[in-house]
Image 1 (cartoon, rainbow, N blue to C red):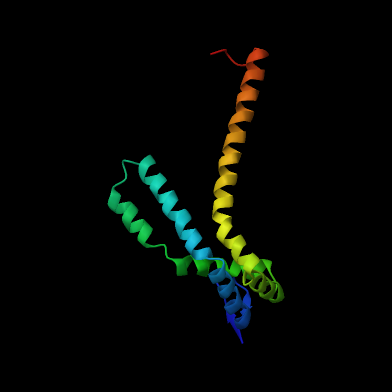
Image 2 (cartoon, rainbow, N blue to C red):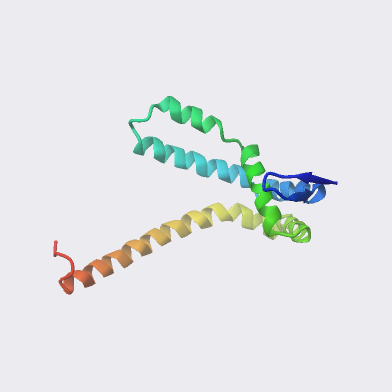
Length: 138
């Protein structure tokens, strides 16, 4: 049975079910909600002129289910049904579960290292440009 999806193409019902299972296994919706909450906290601090009730109301519109619904057509577009099944099999293994458990920490550590590296590169470029007279000395 084929059902229409929001991206404008048909999806196989079994494939959609499997995509949802993959997203459940990988906690994609929960991770998305965590990212939204982090973004909201930053937006609240940055935009102090915006009333708190706006941010409260805005945040209420995001749910795990709504994020999953947005993501299903993307997975459908980029993966075959067999690939989805293979990913479910991978993430159902102990190693796949370990990867899922470690991924948030790995991403956090990677982002921190990336920020540190970016600062080091910026310092080197500034020093080089100052030595060449292209930037004023501090």
